[in-house]
Structure formats: structure tokens, C-alpha cells
Length: 451
Ligand code: NDP
Ligand code: 2IT
Image (cartoon, rainbow, N blue to C red; front, top):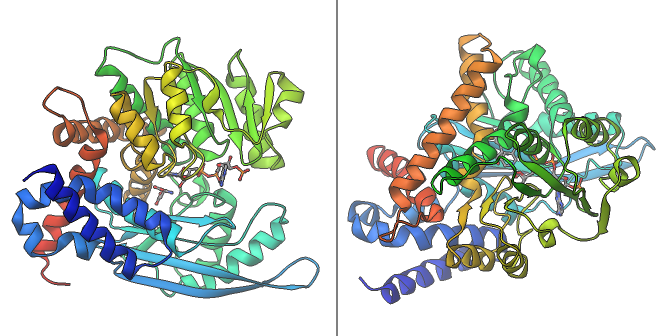
């Protein structure tokens, strides 16, 4: 079949998705990227076509939407929306993070849940896909306000989740503090101590390496990509965006491997430190972001370097770029600038940080480009390892979990290579990740009948 015929099938598919899911721009974007890879594959494998697997995967199994009322410190009543998208349980219980951010809406959570299904399949662990969260903004709230919100959120969510049903975790705005408050409320309401959430504290069922896992895993994936060209991180200049959980531990691992991280950012701007963010500076950033909950611009007062207000890191010259903040944070112009400045590897710690136009630039330039659903799968993979430890009521060592995470990332890279290598030897990781994640989910759906 010619490319034109495939394009027509993609256009028809997307026209239906847009009619059924109006106004959900990020969801449309995520689906489009996946079906562009998958429609040719499904045409060549008609068992998936006849069973309408792609159409079924694009409709969530269940969407839960609820009111979250809570009282702030002044005694004023606040109302937020709460969501859980249970996208697919084909290969295991629904699994995926919770995001608390004022931009959260149905389209954003459906895009994240959709990506999660394929990502979780790529890990090789038995996890379906889901995502949830709220338009609640933890910024500027007291610990007591965050606790009251989390308790109210969980009071409803607990009806719908469970260790064999749906296992949420963290994402933007949801870290150890929030998981603790939600776990406490779940336990109180259900009278059970189970692995219903991941990202728990080490003393109460959490796994070693889970806090590090997304950032470390992203760097392990980038390392595998670099290896295909005989390269490694030693002496390389690395630009990272964000300064939250994923960015922090990506910075740590790059530095451990001999690379130099020169940027971090938050929603206000970017810091640039040409000397590199070493272990001492990073320890201070962990305190700044996780304890003081301050802004990244405070870095330059303490350590020097430059602050670029309301700018992203992509104008800085680098060998490797790791976008670790949020969706659509790398646009076409950013991608062109990165490539022009000699960047040859982009590995996504965030979910869908590059716009479709930016992805096109990376693929056309044939640089190493690892999409989020492959490159950031280490976080959820280690959540899967946390679930295993909870089921066994055992705790594995740091070395063991790190080793398993590393092996999983190497295997995800191999899967991408298997399904994404083009006739000229170029590895199209977008295609590789989409097809590689799809096959197991699709075969499971075929086996389980029309459900
Ligand atoms: P955190 O809340 O810990 O940190 C988020 C960081 O990104 C902060 O520096 C934040 O800045 C910045 N950011 C958030 N929204 C925006 C925005 N709209 N514009 C600019 N900067 C923004 O979240 P995580 O580190 O956990 O998540 C980062 C990304 O990684 C997300 O895309 C998430 O989906 C993805 N991810 C996370 C995993 C995990 O295990 N945590 C696993 C896989 C993917 P500010 O403080 O100013 O808001
Ligand atoms: O996007 C993601 O993979 C996450 N936020 C982690 C999900 C999880 O269940 O650990």
C-alpha cells in the first residue's frame, strides 16, 4: 500500500477520534502520533484490523470524574475536579500516575493514559494503563491544605482502585508527601495495608530506587541510543528542562556517568551553569525544590551562572537534550535550534514534550530521538517492581532494583530497535516504541474476546 493510502486511513481515523472527543487537543496529538506508526502495521496484520483493536484502544474502558471539596486554612470552601481514566486492563491492573496541576483537564489525562498503555507494555511487566489527577494546584498551599485536599480526593477515589484493580502513583505535583496523605486515607477507609499506590515511603512499603527511577531510566535509555553510534556520556554537555523529580535524578545519573548538566528550569525560567551542576549543587537543588519548595532562579544567587526569565533551555549549545518538564515544551523552532547547535540526542523524560513538528525535525535530521513512552518508562517499571515487592511482602536491595531497572531499559531499547530499524539502518524509535508496545496489548485483547 502506498504512503498516500496510509495517510488517508490516518486522516479518516483521526476525523472520527476528533468527533468523538471534541476539544481534547493533547489526546488527538497523542493518538495521531501512535496511529501514524500503527496503521501500516495493522494493514499488514489484518487480525488486528478486523477486531478493531486500534479503535477499541482509543476508547477508555472507564472514565471517573468527581467533585473534590475541601477547606483552606482561612476556612473558605474550595472545589476541584478529580479524575481517573482507566484506559486499558488488557495486560494487568490499570497503572499510572496522578497529576495535580491547574492545567489538568480531560484531554491531558486521556493523552497521558493513552501513552501509558503502550509504555507499560514496553516495560514487559503485567500492568495495564491509567492516569488521573486534579486541577488542584499544590503551589503555595500549606502542608495541611495539601493533606485535606488529598484526603478528600482519596475519599472518592478509593471506591475505584485497589492493588489488583488500579494502582495510581505520582506525576507532576504529586510526590512523596501527596502519596503519603493519600495512602493514609485509603488505609483508614478500607482498613487494609496493601500496594494500592506506588512511590510510597521506604518505611511503609515503598521501593528503593523508585524516586530515582524515571530520571535514571531515561539516562540508561539515552546511553543505549548513544552506544548505537559508539558514543557515551563522558565529557558531554547536557541540557535538561524541569527541576522536579525526573530532572533531578536525570541530572544525578548524567553526572555519575561523566557528563556535564548545564541547565535546569521551571515554569518561570531557565538557569544556565557552564561549570556544570555537580553533586553538591544538585543536593542543594533537591533541598530547594523538595523541602523549601522554592523557584529555580534562586540557584544563580547561590551558585552563579545565568538566569533566563521565561525561557526554556533549548537555545543553549549541548550534545544531549533531556526534556523533563511537561508536554509540548519543545516546539519546531526549539528543535531546529538544538539541531543547528549540534545536539545529536534527545531523550524524553517528560511525556510528549516535543510537538509533532519538533519530532519531524529530529527524525528528518536522523538524530537519536527517544520518545517518552520508551525513554521515561523506567519510573512505571520500578513502580511495577514496587508492586512485586508488596505482593511478596519483601524489600529488595538498592543494587537489585537498580539492576532490574537498567535491564528493563536495555530491553526496551532492543524492542525499539527490533520494530523501528529502517532499511538504511536508522532507528525510528517512535515507530519502534509504538509497534513494540502495541503487539502485546493487541494480542491480549484478541485472546480475551470482545470486551
Ligand atoms: P514534578 O512536579 O516533580 O516536576 C515538574 C517540573 O516541570 C517542575 O520543575 C515544573 O516547574 C516543571 N513544569 C511543570 N509544568 C510546567 C509547565 N506547564 N511549563 C513549564 N514547566 C513546567 O514532576 P515530575 O518530575 O514527576 O514530572 C515531569 C515530567 O515527567 C512530566 O511530563 C511527567 O508526566 C513525566 N513523568 C514522570 C514520571 C515520574 O515517575 N514522576 C514518570 C514518567 C514520566 P514548576 O515548579 O514551575 O511547575
Ligand atoms: O508517566 C508515568 O509513567 C508516571 N507518572 C509514573 C506512573 C507510575 O505508575 O509509576
